[in-house]
Length: 397
Image 1 (cartoon, rainbow, N blue to C red):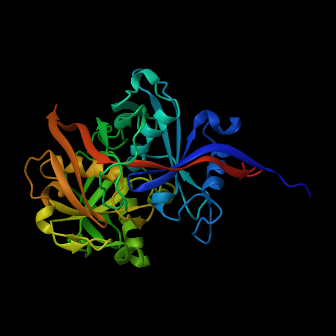
Image 2: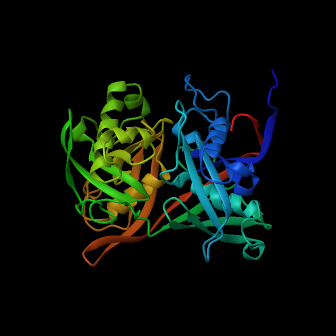
Image 3: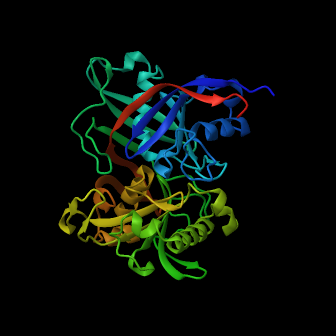
């Protein structure tokens, strides 16, 4: 019986923010995988090592967590006044499924660096020293993201002294601007930032009750609930949630019914096929706690505590897109996020998460009776971990 040889494909393994992923140039993919579809998904699943019933992704590049089971595909932009088109895939660990329904804010921090280093940005726009402004078009949410990438001696600077909670070592700071971050959505009022038209909804969740919830389309569709209302303090670390199947089931039920209320699905059962979005998070006023690294976080250092789940598990830090949702909701007086932070007008917020703290900024205003946010800003870092080729059996896709 003949055996298919392995195919090698140019790829780079990068850390972006508190995530890691395999990055590809679109034109480096096998021709039949350069367009969306089954062949591409099968290839990327095999690259990452999914589906893996053992939940370990031993036979692939994935790291067996939602933060490390990710794919990015980049190409020269087809949009005017943009440098690079960015497409993100969240790869399920134990299922044969690639979720293309949203963005990854953490890996966005590595998009500009990869684009510069791989010739996707016009060399004339890259200074010898200083900052290169990379104009990114996120193809899934149809939004512009601006990455400010430090350059030293004509090359991307990756080392530095910027520290990011959730990342062990310091690196160079990359400032990310998410322009007009409210997603288009398809909710009841035609895709506004708040798809139900309300800053706070009464969300009926069978078997749990009626919860106060802020449903927002910004950065990524997100549902925020109050920690106290579901039996938590907002200071929990991963083990407190992820080791309890009944807790994870509760959050998935909340997420499914929020997705239904937001108009993202037509039946709660559809949520299982849309694991990447929406996110579900719980908020609480500032409180002392010890982070997962042993760092003492004091209430006076933060505005509120937030915990969020990604792909069915509590995230070890905070998803970048969820941080945009947090900043946006905090900027609008009356949302659960804003109220947990003390209420009132604000243009920035520092929140506590399992790995430490993060500061994000956004300014909100009302236009025509609708709340809008023109920009959300945060700092991340990125670093190449490995570059070369991934090898995939030729009959896998």
